[in-house]
Amino acid sequence: MADFKRSLAVVIGINKYQHESKLQTARYDAERLAEILAIEHNYNYVVLATDDSYKEYLNGQELPVKN
Image: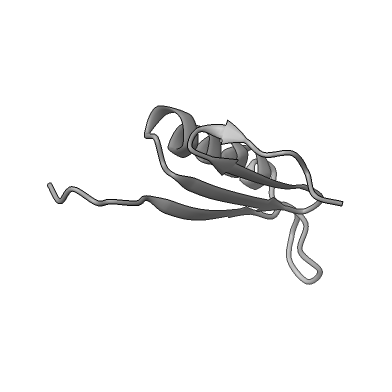
């Protein structure tokens, strides 16, 4: 397996769509995946965007929310 110098991820979880049926677990699945990548797999930078939240992880630590 290749040894990468940096690991980056953008994870998107949307439950509510304008013209489609509402999904039940997309947001939860995305939140959990972002945590796993950031904490368990030591990704350097992870961005999580959901219907109504935004998080960033840098080297396994959740960054403060920017206003």
